[in-house]
Image (cartoon, rainbow, N blue to C red; front, side):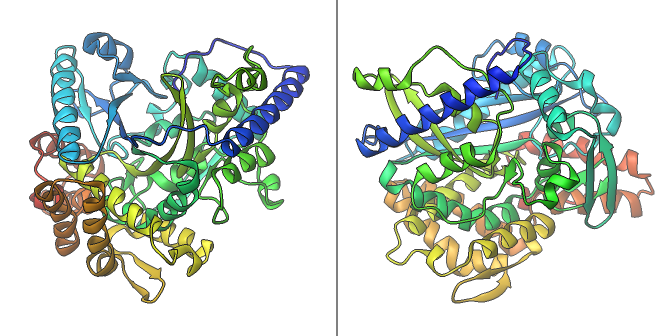
Length: 492
């Protein structure tokens, strides 16, 4: 969603032309699937991390344009809010020491970027939601300068016809409204990309949906919003509500939300793109000059620009991606369920767990999704977002059990074998999965550390909520830079 788009106004003719074009793209995509035109020779993995910027007082710093100029690294890009940036890590293979290479690259890039940002009074923080974020930080003036964000904001509110209502009940309760999409900027995430061939795509996407709940439980790192302690991964309900184009009446009619877990297991990647076209009107009905059918007929690879743009405005927690690299098309599963942080090591460990488990589930002789309803997977997902590492989940053959027990008994052994199948070095495998195991045994992830630290500061040090949250963040930042895994972080 970070591509540059100028200011636009859209007519009915624009929308009609876009509808015709996107259906043409969908037809061409179906033909490409039938003809097996996709790159499957050397499957790659990728990583994106969204970051927050804070000032010396641990408050959001609205300076991403200055920071990006200072960093001068094309792998760092703008994001929705002026206190956000994103790092895009070059794709690589998992085999051998690929995971260690990811970790070393991200740490080196962040350290270099932090040094340059610090010189202009800003600091980078990997966290799901900034503890010090307040409603006054999320206004129309907060949007980054890229006109695409203003245009997206305008189109979402044109579709809604009313302000956004944000209602989250957790440890405490929050009820507020917003007249822009800037609350979405509060949600900073980690995204894992996995290249998959068309024949295997449905199995990998279904597997990713199955494991999403455990991922969120283990990786939760967003317990606060606007001074309230809410869900352990508050980013999930906030993102679902902050980009909702539906009025209350439209919701009651069963119209699907744009931030979406989905509603069924799939049999082909085509199912997801076809749902996008069938269920969701265009937010940005921009057409390019390419005729995808003509491009395909002459033996070249169509960009399918309209199909890709539309897909980028539908925020599935596991999103299909069509992309073209060096003239060759490929497909990816974009796993979007995890928050940023706490450390680079924790992030890479989360990735190792995901890549290992999803491979084993996708390649199982008897698919897990043939034994579990889709609604059970969705219920697991939201239960784990709310309760984090203390959540209970349903699993076929085991019934309801603590998510930590599920991970230790069933999922970690799968991850171990899955990483072996990817060819990951045994030492790397054990180091990273050891981080996940210790999180389960200690019951501590980013969310529990933040909440326990807040309670300690309020009860022992007698700090008020605002001062305590600022102190939580001050303690968080040096521990984040230490790369000591979060289950080892001290309280108090």
